[in-house]
Length: 121
Image 1: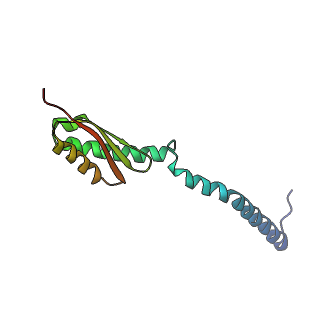
Image 2: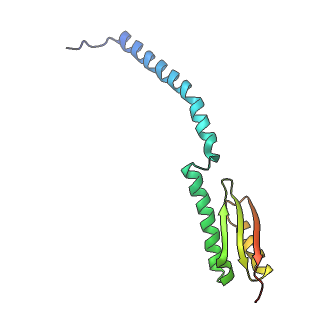
């Protein structure tokens, strides 16, 4: 049978519990701050999802333009929102339009292009 705690013993238990929680929190703070800094880690699932969303938005906008050569442009987004466009376009204007579409997309920090102009046969 348990004996009931008296008010003074109850107060002592609360102080011990609060102290333990404080010590654990203090020990875990560096780990939590390191985890927050690792967002730039490419293997982190949230970073991958963010990059995929940017890539998908750009590809959808390119498809909306309904120009067949824009469908042959590849889009790659890195961990910081930098976009690289590659592939082939029929004209320089189409290549420039793809770059413009990518720049206007939310979350994009920079755009570089290696799009080649397809020569007429």
